[in-house]
Amino acid sequence: MKLTERYALDELKQVYRVLHAALPENLELMDSALLEELQRELQERAADEGVDVSLHAQWVAWLGGPLLRGL
Image (tube, rainbow, N blue to C red; front, side, top):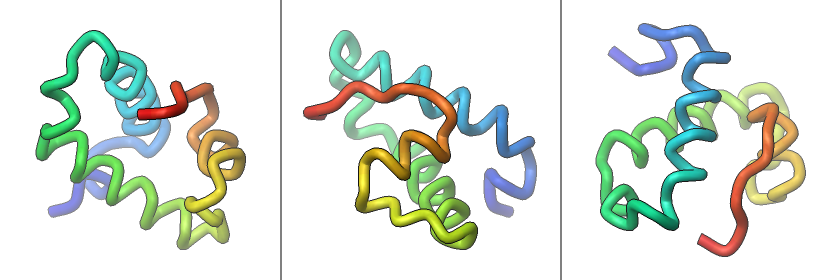
């Protein structure tokens, strides 16, 4: 079962933003299977809603909050 089927989308977006913001201080998160799965599912959901996730501005707007760049 997908994460997006088990949890509210807004909650998943918030968790992703928090984890992404923690990357500079927690580099081991870069190899986290959970973060990878969460990002993949969120990007699939965003694409289903017409968001071009390759465009940072669209991805960030869809997530509803800022993301650190350059990671």
